[in-house]
Image (cartoon, rainbow, N blue to C red; front, side):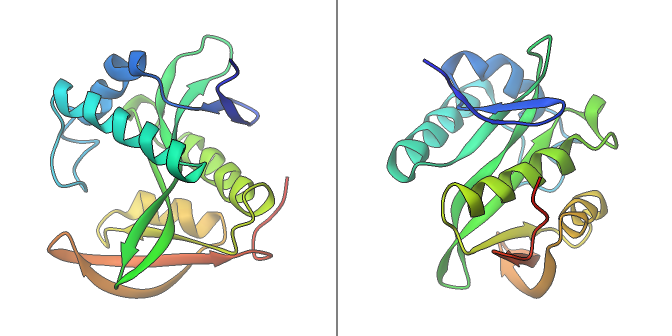
Length: 174
């Protein structure tokens, strides 16, 4: 069974598997990587997260995907699209999270751009959002680089969150 969803120059984004738990736990249990999330995750929470992502994919045909480096098949993060409530409306959100060793090297931007393109070209989406903590400057750079614009600030997860979005036709195509 082919789990690959998207292939980029340096990455393969594929459906999550239960056996990804150890690799994803390295990210989810890293306080620095999880600084802008609610909390780090235990191994049990990581396994539940993977099940939740798999269920989302089965229900909607898309979700967060495991990001593997081409060649060695090393799992370096996750990136993808999921449904998220934004100000009472259900939106499709772009999300990404990578191992620290791969920060600042363009992997998040490469993965995020490919997910946006996939959403518009293959899933027929017309709008994609990203929810960014105002203090998360690196994440903001990623979404701005791929053409997203800040729409507004909301309160979510008991803190201010900036909402960025892009419409179909407003994205560069590979």
